[in-house]
Image 1 (cartoon, chains in turn orange, cyan):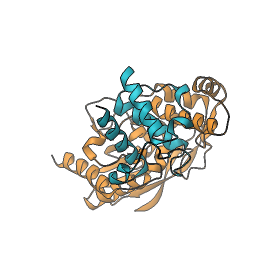
Image 2: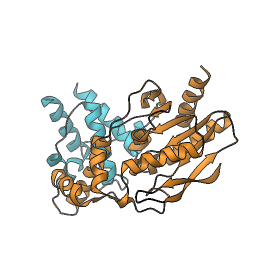
Image 3: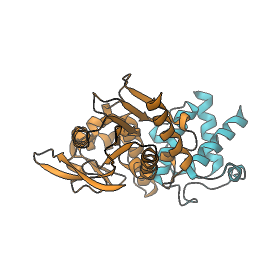
Image 4: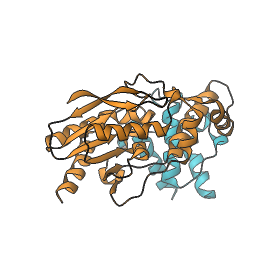
Length: 226
Length: 87
């Protein structure tokens, strides 16, 4: 596993180097990993990297790019919209010469349209947004403030909003509301039931389960050799 | 049917809290949840709500969501049972 970079086009023009974690030995199968989004990215990062370790052991290269505004990125998330993430994923795919894609959860909303691969535990953009909005109103009510989702969303679409520590632009909210996972025959959906165990994105504290990483890597290796 | 809602709810909580299922068996109606379990923060509760909707096929209105709902295991169980009856 080595740290690397890829040239990521910026929304206002220009290019920034974004960080990527890579297992690259110039092998034939090169899988671009699209990470889970926002809060789920933290909860699933350990799992994601462990899946990459197992793919490496099975002779498969993989690449985990940072999305602009997320993880180690120097970009301000408040200036980013999902389209910029899709552009970044496309750039990373070209830079690393990926042959397949593995999208984790909300990462599947950013799948490059022409690539084949796998999507683990898909969900809609609207579901990501709903959970973040609910977390905000629960915290507000605990603090004695009465907020409701309709008002938060209406204001957020105008002026942006801070949810679970993420500063999201109005355009980010607008696009998340309507993004749905792609249903293409080239993208194999891997439901969580196939992997088994407790869904890691539900865990109150980030956790890791080696059996789940084994299972997802096995699904990929088997479908490549089938 | 009631027993299975209880059992399913314990499983969902075990998934969220990372507790062994046998520890969840010791949860009683008075066992405190939100505000009593430090790991059950607002983000975890929000994820739990979405999971409850999926697993019990119910819709939870946002004005029903407050700390009282998760005050104790009993209050959460009563809420899910009532929702199932009207689902």
